[in-house]
Amino acid sequence: MKKYDYLIVGAGLYGATFAHLASKKGKRCLVIDKRNHVGGNLFCENIDGINVHKYGAHIFHTSDKKIWEYVNSLVEFNRYTNSPVANYKGHLYNLPFNMNTFYQLWGVKTPAEAAAEIEKQRKKMEGKEPSNLEEQAISLVGRDIYEKLIKGYTEKQWGRSCTDLPAFIIKRLPVRFTFDNNYFNDKYQGIPIGGYNVLIDKMLADADVKLGVDYFSDKESFDSMAEKIVFTGMIDEYFGYCFGKLEYRTLRFEQERLEIPNYQGNAVVNYTEREVPFTRIIEHKHFEFGEQPHTVITREYSSEWSDGAEPYYPVNDNKNNTLYEKYAELAKGCENVIFGGRLAAYKYYDMHHVIGQVLQIEDKI
Ligand code: FAD
Ligand code: UDP
Image (spheres, rainbow, N blue to C red):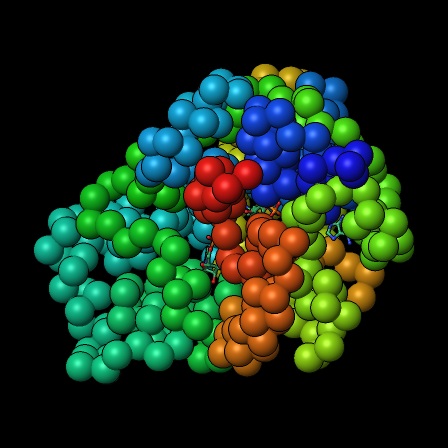
């Protein structure tokens, strides 16, 4: 008999959720990660009382009661509601696109006036099914918002022209004709009290964890330790890039501690003009209503992924999705391996999607 029922490659949210559900069923799990901490991209570093989201701002949101109850059974959530502000050439606009934004841009005061303005600006798109992000954005909110709040930000974020990007990316953002700055439409939202590490540590409490080890450095020996493998790394790497490399976007985080209590008055400020090199500034204390005398901010820069960098965002355009399908076919033939999470599924999953994916296969664990 092997020492473990499951070898879980990756201590991110997928791996940790899987380990938690499996441990509850009495399964013996070994979780390994090449990073020197657990939590994957949710990991927070506590800097003098401020939980710093080391891999970018993470706000938990879901409309699924089962997922919300599941995470709340492990940690309590605060009442944080994400309401980013956009800075375009020194002017501030509320996000997502709502009556506050329309008023700030055009001085319109009623939903009817705002709708008429957008209608005028999207005339060109009439009768045309949007086939890329630019067309989708113009058809949702008109050319003005596209030019000021979407085009520059998106091209920095993805390193591609908006005409070469899939429409679904912009559909993530709500468009509302009410004065409501909540970035999400979901029923439930918040940040774990004490930060994400509390959640992950609870999930991994009954599993063995080994950090700082790359699965591929000794794949055979790791495989021999467990009956089944759960793989949450890059699917193309798993198959030795045999069909070629999938593309990802990576991020560089420039962190700064400031000896002032409040730098920007909001957790997230997006810089939407092309000329500012970073996409956003995060002020971490505001996720937890911190009152420390100091603050920590992070500027986020986006660039193309290359070997050695962290792959943060899959680039789900047609070319990459087609390539991914070829790897997914190979994965189907690996009966002993479960492929899950953002990198193995090559999908733009949020945290609730990832937990949902594991809950879906709970019965099979
Ligand atoms: P990951 O967190 O990437 O975990 C995978 C783990 O596997 C990593 O720790 C990695 O080191 C490890 N690994 C990979 N290969 C190997 C190997 N060969 N050997 C050993 N270990 C390996 N979602 C939200 O719901 N709300 C948000 O506000 C939000 N904001 C985000 C902001 C940013 C900047 C990013 C990048 C993502 C954001 N997300 C957000 C998405 C969220 O981060 C993901 O849904 C979630 O982290 C995915 O978990 P995962 O376990 O699939 O992947
Ligand atoms: N976006 C934009 N302007 C903004 C914020 C977002 O154009 O101020 C677009 C951009 O293309 C981005 C997408 O909307 O990639 C999704 O935004 P979201 O905030 O969901 O991105 P994430 O938090 O996943 O980086």
